[in-house]
Image 1: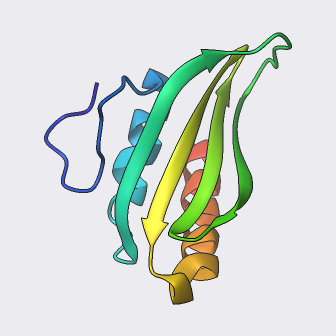
Image 2 (image 1 turned 90 degrees about the vertical axis):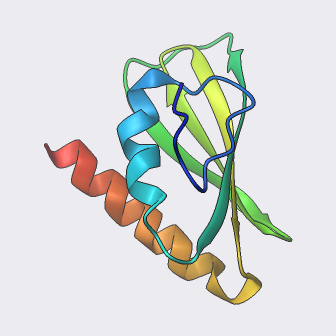
Amino acid sequence: MISPLKKIRTPHHCLKEFEKFLLEIEKIPEIQRIIPWPIQRQQKGTSDFRLHFSYFIETGLQMNMIKWSTAQKLIIVCGKESKEIVLEKINSVWTKINEK
């Protein structure tokens, strides 16, 4: 579990494979808070790691981090005017991390 972070609130464990990603998006200045939800198992599994944008919420956006048959909802809190900018920056970080 990630602990000495400023923006990531970790009442639940995070999927270990996404820790590097979470550390990178924490550096995005428009993001105020990152809240991982409990890890859940899904009936159907996938063989890769995916980050899936769900939808915009009043306080930011909701995404899903998916690893095989495990998923974890991720709430990103940001200003109302910066939601699309934050989504673009998150996608850019995700692409950069997965190129390596």
